[in-house]
Length: 318
Image 1: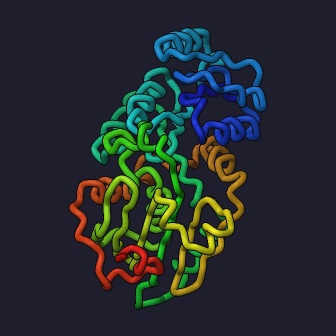
Image 2: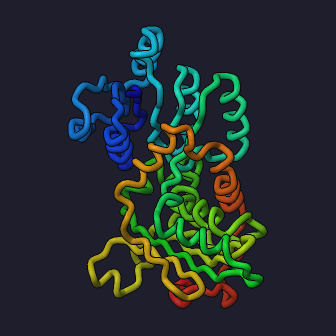
């Protein structure tokens, strides 16, 4: 049984990590979050030492480290705001633990090089959570694409609309320097998935980029991708909005819908199982998507015209 600490225990994604720690037969022994709405921990563990001040959490973890193998923290799971990931990964390595960090691992590509050096210095590993790579439908598509001897690139149309209220833009998520913006905060999952399936980035164009939307064209080795990401409820297709559905996700592969609306329930646990075997995704696995998101964030949008072949084109142009 391994001992885990959790940073960002009050966050939206933290319960997925609590569940994965529990299901893999391990123990959450310490957690920290400036917000104390963390009662959900009782669903998984009762004996967690919880802190609202990082300094006290740091001191406690260091004390456990000095009490030997049975007491020390073996893994630190990181669910904190994006701009803090780098610092919290460094903390994990410094206290002699492997780091398991939510996406994006870092906001800037050069931070990956520094973390790789720290891995060597401390003899510990940094793992990312790339759960879409474990989805059966995604894995099957990758196998099919890599088996085929196809000269023509696949035509991909990605749409992800996940509306957010005003609160979002008052929180750290609405601050570009803290979240990385729309492309990083909600798009990096899909960028990693597409690169993993269809190969390296050859070129890209950013057509729209503001606080609520981001869209563009992505040329990969085996695919041309027209992608559209939005936090604006008005972008939802009418059939979705009228049906009371709160978000919309669509991936069209050569005109056919890729159906992966279910099967997400245990993917964090699957990733944890691989990490515990020493097989989880590391720094180099996340590099391509982080580099792409960084370049998108720092590109000037060129504007949408009829060359952007996407199902929402007419609505975008209005």
